[in-house]
Length: 162
Image (cartoon, rainbow, N blue to C red; front, side, top):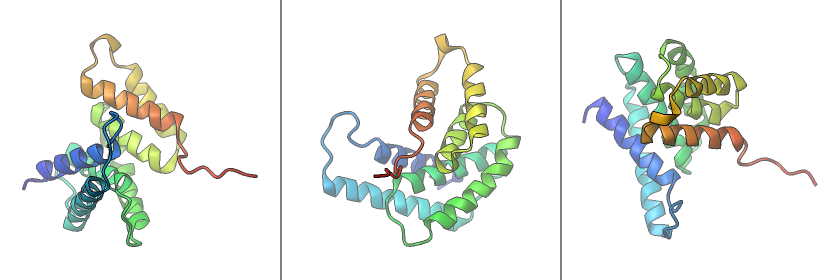
């Protein structure tokens, strides 16, 4: 399987897992478990392959797929945070070289969801502001909605003080 096919498969599987049941359909434990295991398997395989990509766009897609996979899967054998940090370290180099695009917005969103660094959000807002809202593609609309969701709900496990 090619690197682009591998990253696309992981991104698709992670997206499906993250949005499982959002459409109101029931979530069955066996399906959730199967999907979670598949996302974990795909994430581990891509990470373990050491694939980086030969262009900045390929590198961005690899990083995006890995961050999505780690975010979607709730399996962790103790290595997850270390791997996420290594991917984020790669992202810092890639983001500067990546032109403003849908891919860059998606990668900024994934990175912001990990570190909540306001300059990442500002750059995402600038990309969105540069788009013509009348002619947004469905992918752009989905990316904008996901970006806004992450920005509006940055701390899913916020500690509540008594």
